[in-house]
Length: 124
Image 1 (cartoon, rainbow, N blue to C red):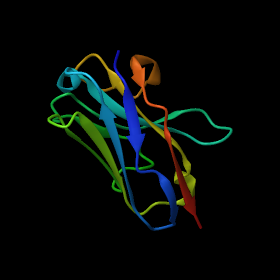
Image 2: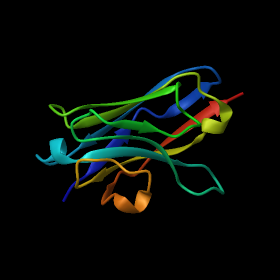
Image 3: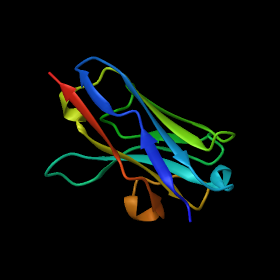
C-alpha cells in the first residue's frame, strides 16, 4: 500500500510563499507520476500541477502558472510544491496524488493514491 503524507501548509499573508512537501512510502516512487490538487470550501477539487516520473514533463493550471513550481526528489520519494505570490483565492486544502504510470494527468480520477491534505490559508 502506498501512503502519501503532505506537510508545509499554514497561514500566510497575500504575496507570501509556502513550500508543500509530500513524502511517499514504497520503493516505486520513481515510477509514479505525481500531482497536486486543491479543494476550496464549496468548490470542486481542481488540478494544480503535475510532474512525470522522470521530472521531465511538468504541467500547471493556468491560475498558478508563473507562481507555483512543482519538483520531485526521487531519492527522497518526495514531491514539492513551491508557492510564491500567494493570493487569497489560493486558499484551499492541498493534496498530493500518485498514479502508477509515468505521465501525469489533470484528471483526479486517474490517480490511485492520495494524501490526507494540508490546509493553506492566504489572508488579504
